View 1 (cartoon, helix red, strand yellow):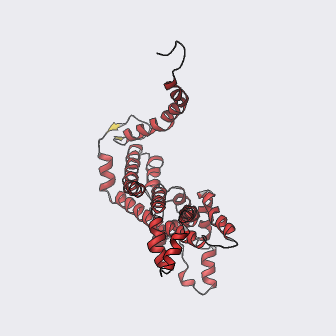
View 2 (tube, one colour; view 1 turned 180 degrees about the vertical axis):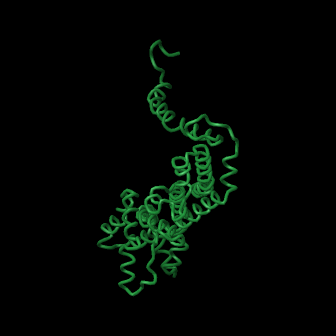
View 3 (cartoon, helix red, strand yellow; view 1 turned 120 degrees about the vertical axis):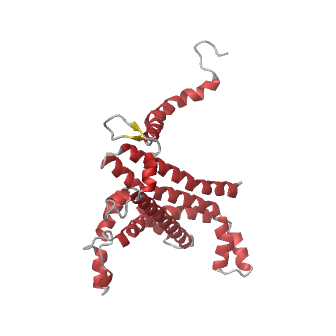
Length: 292
């Protein structure tokens, strides 16, 4: 038994962790649980919430608007995950060689990742504007027929958002893959090359399998980023044209703070958390199998 007034050795770690645990519970865990409870109510943020069970979830999944938002989010996630990981891996392979300027090039490609997404989005909004430099360049090159308001047409607006996101974060994924490439023993690639393997065969049968854990991590990180995207969509298109670029993140915001449907918004946010968890679960299992 501890001496009176003294703290036992097994209690010391908890005494240090208690302030952080209390702060975490008050600021993050408590509001999150409250939000999950509001998902099952009809609440406008002012009057008392009214219990409605699963009505909010049925409305979102049953209405064309909700299904459209979910479909657009999945398309954006697919395009972004493939695009940013392909670009990051390509940059890593290109800059994993003996180049005199590779340090400078690595820094230049990584810089956009540390810039605020809002700043990047406003720069690209200017570039992609109907009167912006991109259309001016196309017209100057005799390709004026291709000029268009890239962020104002339903057929190109979502692709423009993905383009901006890939441009900003491909340098971050480049660093992930560079770390993975530098962890592969050069002797393995050299032995494969001596056995007659060309660059593509060496990459496919040696480099790519050994990069599998990094590929899984890169895919998981990019998937979570794209599911939670908000800043870029709001700054580039505001969800337009006609809601054509609304994703789950912007839809939750608009339902809560524009239409005042806090209960419905909480239900969609809860669905977003569940979708992210279910999508990340297979990748975590694959990573565990790969490192086990």
